[in-house]
Structure formats: C-alpha cells, structure tokens
Length: 214
Image 1 (spheres, rainbow, N blue to C red):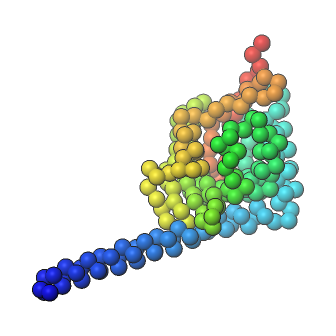
Image 2: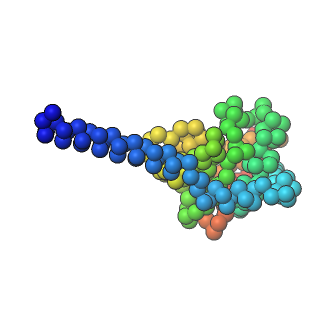
Image 3: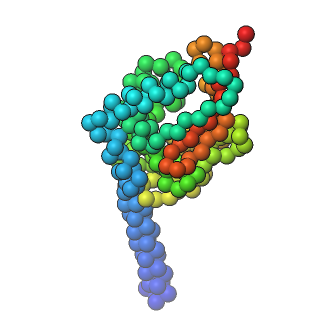
C-alpha cells in the first residue's frame, strides 16, 4: 500500500471516529435534563401539589366566568401553579372535558409538561417522554388584540436543535403564531385575549369578556 493510500485511510478512520464521538456526545447531551425542568417538577409533585392545583383551577375558572363589563381584565399566573396543574389535574380534566378538547391536544402527555420563565419576555415549555426532556422557547408576537406565540428555540436536553425541525408539542405551539383563539363560554359570552406577557416571573394574561350575541 502506498504512503498516500495509507494517509487517506488514516484520515477516513479519524473522520469516522470524530463522527462517532460527535454522535455519542449529542446523545449524551440530549439525555441531560435541563436545570429548569428539575426545579419546575420538584414543586409540581409535592404532597400538597394536588390541593394547590385544584385551588388554582377553581380560581382560574372563577376569573374566566365572572360577570364583567366591557373593561379589560388581567390575571397573573405563576409557573409553579401551572406546573402543578399539568402534573396533577390535566389528565382527569381532559377526560372530563374530552368533547371540547381537540384530539391532537388531548393526545399530548401534558401531565409531563413543565414551564419556566428563564429570560424576561420568553417562556420555556418542557415535555418529558421516553426518558428525555424536549423543550421549546416561546415569545409573544403580534400586536395588542391579536397576539400569538412564536417558537424561537427548540432542543432535547442540553442539545439545542434547529427550529425548523420542531415537531410534536413544539410544532403544535408554533401554529399559534397567527393568533390565539377566543374562548366561548357556555352562556354565549366570549373571552378574547388582548395581550400576553412573560414578566416578573409570571405569565400575565389580559383579556376582555364580550357579551353573548342576541
């Protein structure tokens, strides 16, 4: 074998080793759980988490169904409250309200979802499945009265991925960029989202309740 052939062989071998090492490193990174996930889940599975989640659900339902005038109103939701609700209440609630929930949403394992506000103005949504935590970062887009959500980052564990490969829950959330839909109550009134912000460690939601159309 000539010296040039041996050199090409060594280069190919080195390239193969580098690819394998890079692939193994990516697998390791993908299996690492984000610190935000561990913090979020710690409070969501405490013994008192179910009672807190039930209280949060009742308070949120009362705010949405309250009789109101034409003035906008707002609520601030803490990530810990929302994480507890996902972990403790999502599955039974989804079964109870199955007729009003789209099949693709009801099929999502949202009991394994946690959220965190890491940077002012963005929300980190994390989903655990098959031992891996996938995540996406959301930012608010649009103008007041017509706001939506944009996926600005996705990843698996400690491994960032191109936003273009977003699928599953991240892909579903990306479709909300065109605007978040209004909610129609049982009495015909409509709750419309006016503005949304991730600030001061909370999710601030501003809405307006429109009367039922005669």
